[in-house]
Length: 314
Image (tube, rainbow, N blue to C red; front, side, top):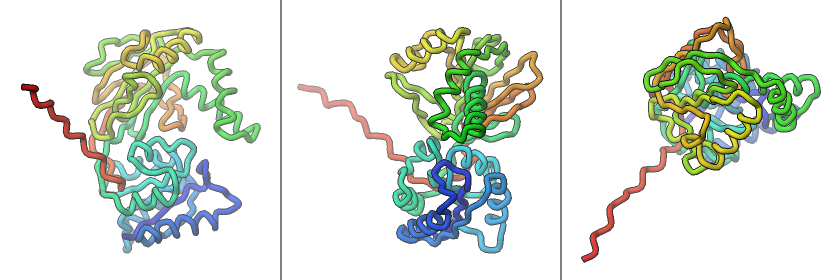
């Protein structure tokens, strides 16, 4: 196997002072797994160009591996979705949600071995107004918090984890509430006044409480959640109830599973989060799921357990 590894130089786990050492470590990890890896450190904004050049070049690799976090994967998915370009993910970001959902180990050697021993799987990718996302998109509180967090990081030099509590406090203090119209088959509530809308690439749930998890990367659905509370304490209480009872049982939270949804408002633009990255987008926001549009190199999913009814007792 021959792979081309593109390392996002700005990823959370990439040490700019030791790029050479990390490049060598990545190359050695793939060599140990039995693959020949060309490793290149690339600025984030150049990843799409280098991906296309690698895949369309005279010596096409078996896969283009992007090394970084969910924002890096988002960038790669925008290039690869709907094409035959095979991507892999080397989790070098802060949270690495997509890599975890693919079943990839968090350590470098384990992830390289899992990729080399894996197979090409078609998984779903979602998009809004033509912009792809692999995990989720959000409106309201979350993109506002990310914007404040990034402002703090830029001006104070803090890391993401340290900046988050301050950003959460500031956003809850001045809670953004939007009046939106949501239209989608299977979603009864149309006119909403809400501080938070979540659209997942796949259905996220926590039926028994705890943190939400994605049920599948191949169900062809968007998971929609809309908060009906309009105060900071109501939002906090709703989040606490969701952790205890599960999102599907939480009061003041509307949930739906659907293939497409359109968001409109009197506002001309809204701040939108896509896989943790924030951008301003013109309305209407047209979300859709693209089933199986992304070709990823990953471990085969574990088979469903063979559950049989117990033999009757005579």
